[in-house]
Structure formats: C-alpha cells, structure tokens
Length: 194
Image (spheres, rainbow, N blue to C red):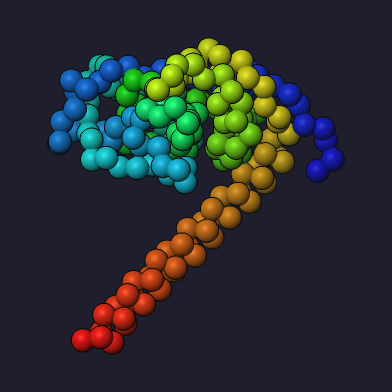
C-alpha cells in the first residue's frame, strides 16, 4: 500500500452510545454480561466479573452488537492503567454496558479490527493526555471523539487488523503453552521431593 494515511476525528468515522447506571437491574440469572470499569483486562480482553443484568427497556438500549467496541471512560487509579481501553465485541447481544463506558460503532470506512488496534494503541495515549480528576481520573466522550487518528484506506485497515488479530492469537497460544509447562514443572518438582 502506498496511499497516504488521512487524519480524521473519531467522530467522523464512528458513532457512539453512552452507558447509564444499571446496577438496579443486576441479577444472577440476567440475560446480559455487564461491561463496567472492572471488565477491561490489560491484554484487551473482557474480564468476566460474573455480573449479569436483566433484559428491559433500559438495558436493551445499551446492548453491544457484534463488531462494536466499548471504551472505559474512568479509572479508579490516578496512573491511568485502564482509562481509554477498548474491548472488541465478537458476539451479538451478549453484553450490556454500565455507566462510564461508551459503545463505539465504526462506520463503513473504519474496520473494527483496525479500530481495536488503533484505539488501544496510539489513540489511547492521546486519551490519557486529556484526563481530568485526581485520585480517580476520567474523560468525557465529547473530548475523546474530537481526538485525531491516522487512517489508511479500508483495504489496508482490514489487512492490518487481520495481521494484529493473528499476532494476538499466536501470543495467546504461546502464553497457554507456557502456563501448561509451568504447571508441569511444578508437578514434577512436587513429585520429586515426596
């Protein structure tokens, strides 16, 4: 690819929907998995806190669709460990967002896999520069959607997105293998000294 990358505001290439307080709809047998501040893993994966919410008019309006992303807008620490992190949702109507989380819906000129890589990479560093607060920091989405990101043509985005997805899968594979080998070593050592 030889085309120049464009500088675009997030608001030009993605729509959004905001979360609201849904704690009163939490129920162990609820239909939806809840995405809240504790759901954002440092590896870009969803952390299941076993919080579920029932289906009703309020929660159904905040359900995440396949190919959308969610972004956390506050952090309980001042160092910004999770602020601005995004999750890519690969299933339809399984998750609902709580307050201080935003749903980001990429438009047709913004590939969702590329969006995931970009929003968790260079774009997140820009988000961290506009935080407010002290011991608990936060950002407002209107400020986030005005930030600029670099955007290649859609075909190049798709290829980049697929490449990084393959790399993530490979890293996960090797991490699982490493964990298995550590468990095997631990088992051998225990048996050796009996």
